Image (cartoon, rainbow, N blue to C red; front, side, top):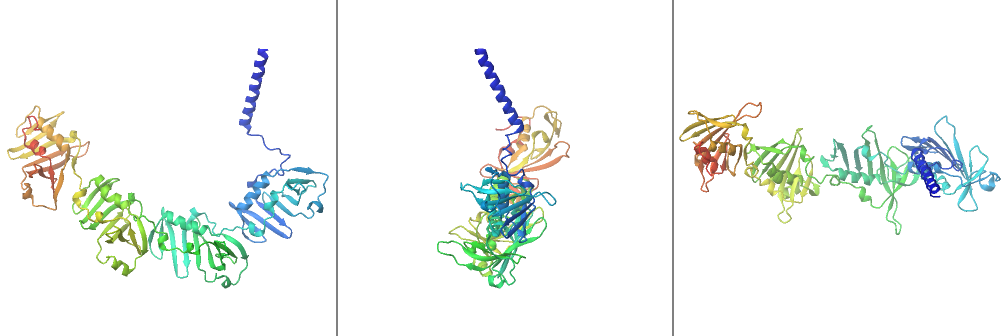
Length: 591
């Protein structure tokens, strides 16, 4: 008994496994073909004809959409047709009525509406005739073309077939995909605004040059793409004046970045005032180049009135920070000019050449510039500029790009109460209010950015040292892993103080910078210096590099004034570097 039970369970498991395998291999079972009205795929159909009494509408697939071919040559409502064809593909027969004759009693002679479709020119057409609603209220009588049999189908299928001519027309006034828009032009009675795609961003081209923001431009495009036809007034209008379209209040044009062709629409006069409890007005409109006039519903016509400020990016910088190759700041602290040497590295060109501290530069220059955000935009009118001090500006910031492009920011004044700065950008006829003070940038001094790193090399790369000291010159060379004195006489053996000096030089950092621009060297004990150290560095197969460190007197706090590589700048070093340079090389290094 137990054996039979186990055998039965095994058979059930094998049967279920076989079914599951077949299901995975073949997919779910197809719907009952006997219930399907048509064996077709919606995406294969190319031509449709819809007959509603005397009204005949023809449609032809055009690219990814549809075009109405009769009674009008216009774009068709692709969404409605797609839904209709989807319903047609899934249409199932509710019942077959072989005893019913397809006559007037069931609304099939003539039919209420008929739909004919084919996969292309020269292919066989199929169709369906839709009649009256049946007694059950859920189905309707129907008949397939070329067949005598009367069917019952869900009456919901007929709802889309009964939609009118205007429903099957495309209501969109702009059909070009937004990601293909190369240029947007808005023409008002008194001005024109043009925004064009440049490289990876947008720029305002008219009425002035300005940096346009991607998000701002996208929002403007969304506003105009949301304008759609409400009703169709006429398709053969010869006189546009009654609709205010001879002198429209707005013309919108977009250009295709693929083929360069323009398209757009115009907005005319108001067709109807808002009715009680309505939030939208009706305005006349027409697609440009068309004789058709329609109405559109707009809750606020002012939303379509754009200024340059609606497109201007709220980021001050013209491009990403990574594209900036040079920065020049002219302000209270004088002129500070720097150029990029590597992704995060900068060196100064003015007021003195020198390597800048990357972290300090990022903190005090790069980050403030990247965070500059415009809080308000207005036209740069002469009287307004003079009022804000642009005749005697606080300073200028010039940002240079590797491709030669430049952006010059001129700072007129700063509101001491709000700490807002007023500035202009070269090539843009706009006045910007920046919601943060820019005084710190204009007050930067070279010393606050100069890198404290004097020499950065590996200890093994230091191959030679020459010490010019008050008690005579000493020359040392590496030999194996240690040092030997080469002059004035050869001296071997451990030289711990010299090794400590080489280690200190390999990672030499200044405590601070004290003077720039050919200072009086004698005041710092550097004309002549107490000790001059010549450092020979050899890295790999590169030619030797010679560095010279000059050590002067000590300041009152005990730090040593120094000069490196004949630069016109004085630094302070820890006193130990001088103690090591004057020590007996063979003795233990001073603490």
